[in-house]
Length: 340
Image 1 (spheres, one colour):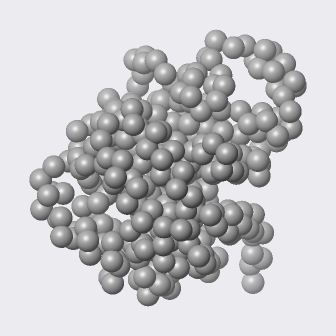
Image 2: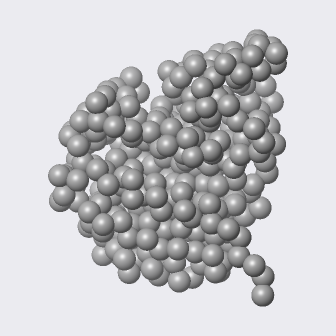
């Protein structure tokens, strides 16, 4: 992606960030139409964009079927604390099956987007700790791009772990922009959650530095810390390590600090959209009681709470990830309830 001077929170469409054959901005509409006509029905098209948050460039990625007619629903995937967007949602694990949620939902007919938050992946770093409030600003900038490219003012959001907190905080701040919201591996108050208790022991270190260590061993620990490493293929963390190696061994500390010291960040009574909450039965970032407390306070009657069996914190990377996709697909495609 190349830089150009643009106004605040505007977009540059560009080619080639390694997620597929991005469209160069110089391709004419007739050439694009010809390429689409030659595409296979299940072929996935990739594009890359820049959003701007002030002077900070945020890398965005999009996948959808190369042959699409009519208006397709938009699904925006919000990444968590420790990995950038593509290793979270567009991961390739050679010989191990499909791990790209972007591919899965593109094939379901969704126009799928994600982004690297401030200080992650290919995005610039503002120098802040990229906390939840910063993440809401990132998503606000991203929505300018999504609206410009799709023409849709209201879209679906999915967030995992602190990405779920980011997505819920955005839904609270911008309710008119969120259609249906999926919160996976969410944390509300964190009471009784083993992983949150571990982070609370490091509050002062998290406050002292806007970035924290994230090396290969830390990435591997994500898949062992809940005590059930057998539910993941060991090739998965190695694929993430390979995908993240060019981004260094530190990442922003803000979401860890928020989850250790500042919960709750989201007021469930202010999340007005339909909500699906999913929790792996062995997820150490929450308890059923913690999440059901949040769930009961949601004002929209169109809501679901799903426990994913034989699954821990990283449901999208587990051997049972199809259970997550099944719950997501059915929730997003649910018919609108009739008014009484």
